[in-house]
Length: 279
Image (cartoon, rainbow, N blue to C red; front, side, top):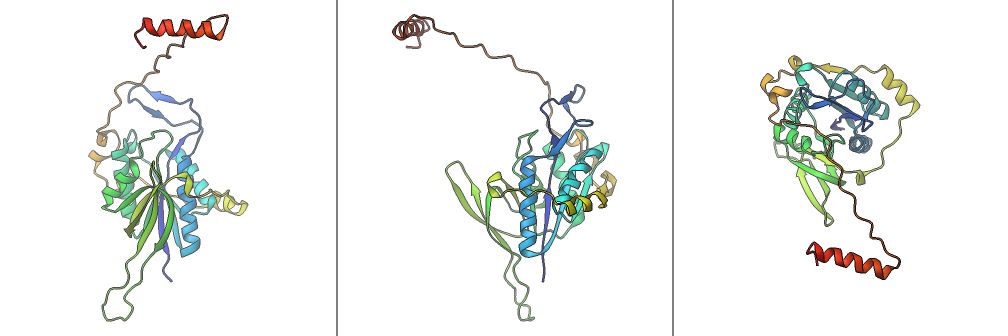
């Protein structure tokens, strides 16, 4: 029986808000900072594991980052992922979402054979929600964002009579969260989805999983391994530029209206509002 091969794209993000900025590049300095798997990516990992449990197949987790990002991959392996791939090269440093998505797409192309790619809806450090859709565009895949539930998932069936007639195509039907409720969207496979926290409850790693993850081999690919266009990765491939990083000034605090009684305070407030022509 054919299984469902799922790729999960994750990111290691700072665990603390006390991060440092490289003043030359205006990018985050991640080395030496306590980090975790991006919270939304935990839901992506969990959903991939549930799909494998129902349909069989394999879950491969991919991340791009410095060598320390290997820790995030081992956490994913401890949760139950089958394989892990780290994309790490100084050439990737300083990448914006466009360069990041291109690099991740090249890794998926190199691995090949995926039925579904799952991402968290956005990263906690960047909050752009752009990487998932951009990866899909690089791979020419249909994609659905903000998925809160997978209603149905099917790999389809091959030719049933051996005579060359087409079998049923694979598809995924999901609920996409909106501000007003949700939409039901169906897409052919392979496809890419980004998920929100409403989709599931991530599991905890087992002792067996942690022991396995500690010994597991993690594939490491550099820019040369991926065969990337050097002009499309890292800072060189990033049209986004951070011109200045600064702490905004604190807002002025409101004025406390004094008065012996509520009525007196109201009269004082109304008078001040009239002075400023607000009433």
